[in-house]
Length: 592
Image (cartoon, rainbow, N blue to C red; front, side, top):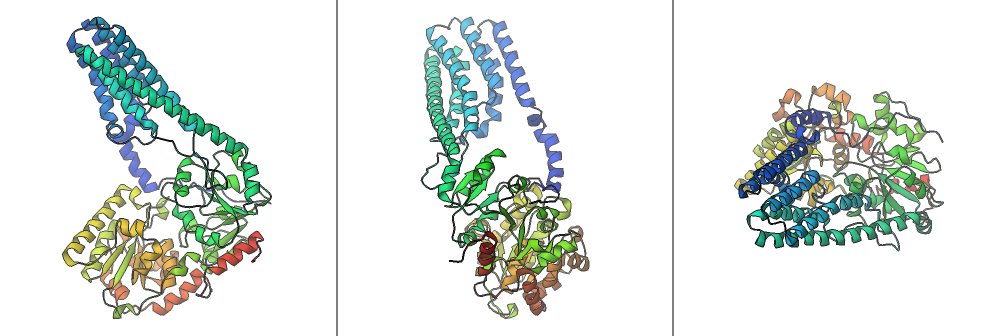
């Protein structure tokens, strides 16, 4: 089976606008980190402190010299040191400087005549404790998670305790050692005890790591046999940036309805942790290209993909499997009609609009690739409770998108979001604010989100209106719950618009760059919406759009027609069954 197409675009690529912003930030705030200037500065100061201590010949004031680089280390690592260690913590940082500081402290003690048995013991323990850090860090990199929820196997995917405690212990011990010349009788025993505690922690951690690595290798060696016994019929393959688990979780309830065993395959430890905590289905981490070979067992018939990540082509090369692209939303974004889709055997789309979109963007696709399955996620979207003009206590959902991966896919209205929300509040509306999960990655959009949440909190306190925002709307509620809590919606070029069409409720879309006519031409879904133009950061016809959205709603009939075009001509009753039926058909799964 031959699969053609351009090289996939990595879903982990940073947005262009954000990249430009970050370039400026890097040049000022992060250049030292990127060029390793801070370790160079600390190492230089540490060497100078050694020379100073040696030159002063045991004078008590010489202790100030090594304190300067040590205090700089403490300042640079203050966040790591002032909170509970996050697994490996700061282990291994400023290793060279800390070795030199141990030597400096030894010189200071020797020059002061205090380098006796206890002093030598403290120095030896310090060197041993510090030497264990790189070993611990290296082995921790090998003890990655590997599998969860596998039948008959309980994976050891996490450390038994936080190994990072060794770093604050070693830093504390080093501080005591540097100061030991001031009060050796008191400080040297404390120094030895602290370093001994660090060695014990490191020793226990190394034993735990060895067990985790051994268990992981044993599992790896027997994985194919495990899968042959488990008999998965398909895999869900996923690789994505942080906070992207929704791409998979939105599909799991409907993949479960296929009624056959399956597993989720991820490629990074970060993705593993994201999804393993959100599902009871088997999750398998396969990091290298060759690791994927063990997944090819006789029972496996297909693979579902939920994005166009670059590493998808690592899995799609297995021609014996049927590769099905689901994506994670229906929208008019250019990324929804990319030649990359050609490398999959099937593209499951919500409605005819998704198929026509490829022709619109000049991307030829073989017709047999497409299967219309609807958007099963909208099966629980409730219809409007009545004409919006007749409703009391109207609620409007504001669901802006993020910057996108390139400038041409930046559709976010958040720069003018505060003005939009203010207009809703002036009309007495309750606001449900749910920005895209990636929105806060950009400093500009993060500030806009903060301004809106503060505005809603202030209005709620003043009027008693129960606005939904923050953790309530973004975490406790899913997007369908936000739809059902609203009587209308304002959004951008986004997948939530297509899903919201299923409700039949009025909606508006924001055009961030062009006029209404051009926007509708570029984004046909906007024909079902009231277009709010925000070209050059200035909202146009805001009052008229708000009046239509929350008043007479002249697009009501037209909106129903476009809902069928985008979400498929599928009966509302048992709407999600179409997806299940088609998926079973493609994978050769019997309905029984």
